[in-house]
Length: 125
Image (tube, rainbow, N blue to C red; front, side, top):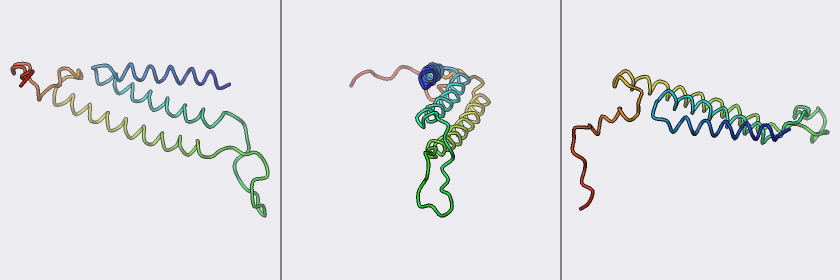
């Protein structure tokens, strides 16, 4: 049951790394979005895919009376969703402003601090 999820997670991570190594900002943004989904799926899979009852202790009991689900992966996934969405939104606004100011989404053409007309820096001392 968990082997297909492991393969899917590997494909997601590989696709995310491939897209984030691109020189275009739109591909980098898609890579960040896929990376966030890969992390969420990884956390979901590490929590084991089983059907268990919710972790609720009945009234009058001191401990759980049956096997219950682990609530920690669920809390981690919720936190990861919030973090990945906010990071994606920040990068989206940052890339949009960079596109507005520079007129391109190519990272190689965004080198304002290193104009092509300047001579190359010295290679030795």
